[in-house]
Length: 187
Image 1 (tube, helix red, strand yellow):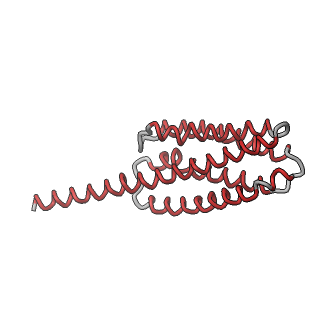
Image 2 (cartoon, one colour):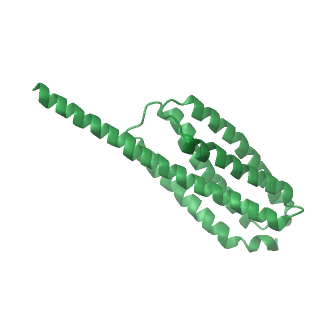
Image 3 (tube, one colour):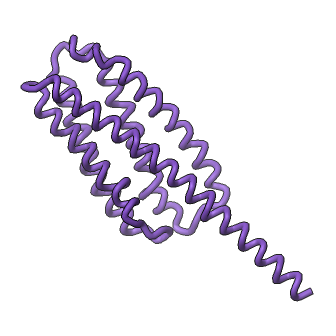
């Protein structure tokens, strides 16, 4: 489809960024595994896994946009499915965030882990319905939703690293210093 070729560079950039950031998340998770916080499994399902899912959704949409579709209806159905599954996944993430006890989510956490992903996936789903009648507009909505998922993933990945560095690692170093000070006082 001619409409898709105009978006080639955009989706190559999005796919490259999403793929690279997925790899980087694996490195971060390896580093965090050295000192996992309490209830790490539930916290990971609530905060880390959605980041990979959003990066993967960006990568998937980008790959689908590069395929040589004969008509808009085929990718529209797939974008609708991605959007619908993403909306269901947001409900699952909401439940996981409420159940985990390792971290008390604040406003920014709810915004970037629930609200903005809901908006992104709703954009993909709604663009799928609009695509047959308003192809050009739908392509912009799909691009905006995909880019938003990428930015959400970047924010959430940074948040996870910052939390680990400044809370987990710094907290364990502070505990070690406190323990050494106590040992010196008692000896």
